[in-house]
Image (tube, rainbow, N blue to C red; front, side, top):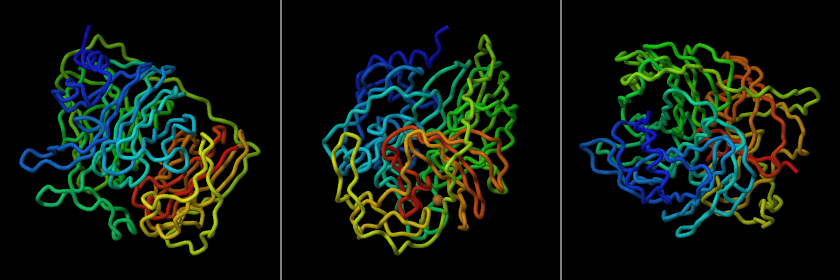
Length: 471
Ligand code: C2O
Ligand code: CU
């Protein structure tokens, strides 16, 4: 049977460029525009486009990768990704493939893994993503504004198939009462929990209704692409099992609620019944907030197995162990002459563009702040590892805010946590609550320069960011 989504996928697959593809500009429900990109070259054009989020407001000057927000790029495990980023913005940008253990030169971090893509220029990303899972992509410089205006997309690497598979991008928008953008980074927000969005949306729509298959196993792929908000996600109206965390399969367990911080993903399997609504809620506040409603219609033939292939946890015996401090305040001791950074292609970066440096400093990572604009240089690495070294970090949050800590190019194992109970699981972003200590381990097996930072983007951009080197 050919579903509407199959038609959309095959239609889109025929288009060389997402931006030029008419099919992408009309999805009939709140599903995101999808493209099957495996083993074919596509172009993503980052450009200002007007976006009407609410019918009565003037359109926003959004920055998007397609005519609509949040394209979903799908490929099968083993297929090659080949995406040319064309920059038609007025400032430089890049694409970071969040959570993907790709080659360092494709990681999209300006000055650390590549030079930024200047206005009018292009950069081609091509590699074979090694793991199946739910990933996303976004810029990595002036990120609060670039993500805040809409530069976000999903990357789905498929392995097992479900009766239905729905990508849900949680992202709020900072709008004033006339529906215009508010500043994306504020000192009062950055020094606290971040500047929250005023309009909550899923797939760019406030509390959308999304039609799904009935009598089916539906896979919901939740992606928190908000720069700031930690949602406490839960499902009402059906039993939901957690099947993957940050794209990594887990032994399925029943979902109660899950704290989904910025940068984190959660895959759920939900059993649907015909005409019985299922709701996705944020239970963080006393009064739960409705994020989306699923409306199960056409019955599927119902295959119905919800388990995914799991990767065994590595052995961390003999690991190098270190306490990573998450701190508030400013590090006064930034070395005046950090060494130049060697990009994966051998080029040497010395002086950094101020756009990628911190906008003032409020936060520290391991006692150091990413240098602010006045320092004009990228800092030295926090750590240097030999390839294959095993690492255990006790992440110690002595601040009064929660920090989702994200590591590039690697998958960590969350081993234990002192406050928020969670099973041992693999992840690329781990939420560390105020005054919590979370122990993670990873094998430093991917050579290059890798970021580690808080994914509350205003925390990242005001100091809680660093990098490490693997030789
Ligand atoms: Cu999603 Cu370094 O980020
Ligand atoms: Cu933080």
